[in-house]
Amino acid sequence: QSALTQPASVSGSPGQSITISCSGSDRDVGAYGFVSWYQHRPGRPPKLLIYEDTERPSGVSNRFSASKSGNTASLTISGLRVEDEGDYHCCSYAGSRILFIFGTGTKVSVL
Amino acid sequence: QVQLQESGPGLVKPAETLSLMCAVSGASISGSDWWAWVRQSPGKGLEWIGEIYRSGSTNYNPSLESRVTISLDKAKNQFSLKLTSVTAADTAVYFCARDARTGTLYNFDSWGLGAQVVVS
Image 1 (cartoon, each protein chain N blue to C red):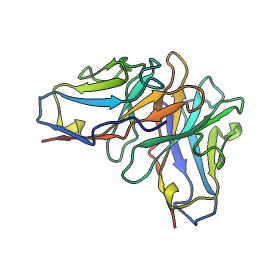
Image 2: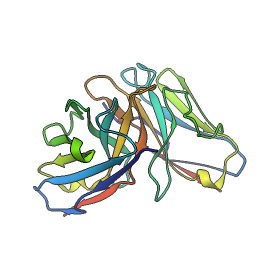
Image 3: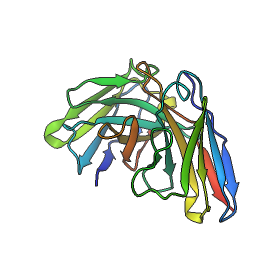
Image 4: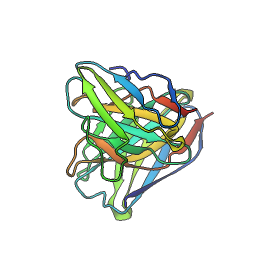
């Protein structure tokens, strides 16, 4: 199975909303309810933002939200801030053969 | 708060074995979670390498399975990664992470900072 497809980069102005897509297949994203999203900022460990398609862990800002339709998952960042700059990765459970498939990663820039 | 820290050589020669350790604090590797390795090659996305459970059961990425071994050191609360016969394609930042299985499923809720490994 191939990596999930994400746009290479997305940008926005402070205060705006942006959406990052994550396109998979009916063997991963579309087959299970286990898409997760991670924020990776330079010098920090990756941080879990979303799990089980749409759930937000305690302590994660409600400016981060997610949805899924068919084989495509999406992460929306509302009220964009400079500190949101970094790389964002989606990940899907993909069954017993290869447990996890990550996306190609998206670089978010705040202009 | 769970913390993970990778350690190991930053430079490995081609055809040799890459060895990394992940020290875990704030959680026991003998608990209900799985413990994983993930890597990121230059200019690419993350790639799941494999993971291990307290029993020693493992799951590996089929693309790496023939070369990967993940093992536990319960006495030191750490787990390790060995990747044999490395090539330049194995140059990457290697992360250890917790695959949480308590209350949620199939996500990585804690990560290390990552260890840069260059094969040259």
